[in-house]
Amino acid sequence: MKAWVNGRIVEAAEARVSAFDHAFTVGDGVFETVKVTDGRAFSLTRHLDRLTRSAVGLGLPLPDDVLLQLAVGEILAANAELREARLRITVTGGPAPLGSDRGQGAPSLVLAMAPQAGWPAYADVVTVPWTRNERSATVGLKTTSYAENVVALTYAHERDAGEAIFANTRGRLCEGTGSNIFLGVGGRLVTPPLASGCLAGITRDLVLQWLPEAGEQDLPELALFEATEAFLTSSTRDIQPIRRVDGRTLPAVPGPLTERTMVVFAERAADNMDP
Image (cartoon, rainbow, N blue to C red; front, side, top):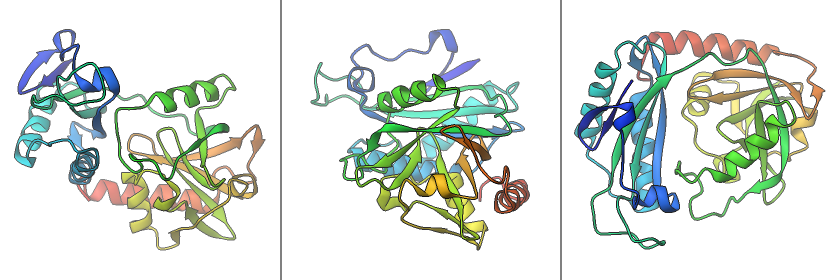
């Protein structure tokens, strides 16, 4: 496998940034993970738009769109053998002092790819004792500061679950460590609003756009235990039905709303690689 590092294609073993890079020292960076299907990047425009929003929110200068598009084309060509993969685009604060202050150098731009194994047919999830801060300075930004997610996902794995679900500081349902969540409530398909502190997931947004019966709703964490059906969304898993919540099996796995969403999403995504 090869990586794209600050304008150069290099072997994966040679992909390096400075030990003083601000993303390495303090997590000062933003990123996107893009699904690659049959060698093509899915929904790339939406991902690059969100990368821009994250960079602006974090105060990072972002390479122009022409360079980003060029870099994506070059990394896909360099890894042409990876037909089904994940592509990660990372922009960092660049070399900086060993502290929170940023340096004066240019940001680093790194693209890397890896094979994408299929997700399990169903997800078992657990709720965690920690919360998302819906008033955080970085709320809604996809930053490289993922230690909180690492801890929560480890907690889930220790309980034989594949994803951890956060509530926010107000006890309202929020999101997973790397996913959004939808519930079947009263015959409707609902997901927490962005005001809950969740990330504006690409797949989440497409479900809301493509499914007229789907909408946002402020939900208590308890709603997860009362739902008739539920599923996770993310860029690499698409739609993944939830089977168990904290060991409790949901009434319908997958339920009719979930099944319809899976069919519609697959059909619409196949028709347009950059919706």
